[in-house]
Image (tube, rainbow, N blue to C red; front, side, top):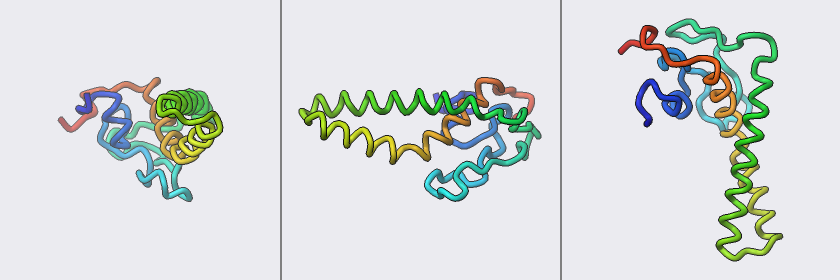
Length: 126
């Protein structure tokens, strides 16, 4: 599942979607907020240009929205099963969403570019 050639490998290892060799972000740590979304212009290995066109990653906003809603719903279900009140659930949802926002933004961009670029063995070292 996390092997090279899978979507999950690209997402969790900060790799180019086509060759899965070069890094996508300049700083893989999502909690370095100043540099969190800085990307390389192109893949260092296969030379895939990451920014396909101006405003290419605007679509990632919708992916991020979906991820955030899923996390909010999951948090609500967990807090409901734990017997927390609505106010406590609301606070938990806000905390989860705020804490995971930097991670969600990075994953949303990687997911978005993976919708348009697939892994190709001919660009890989293996």
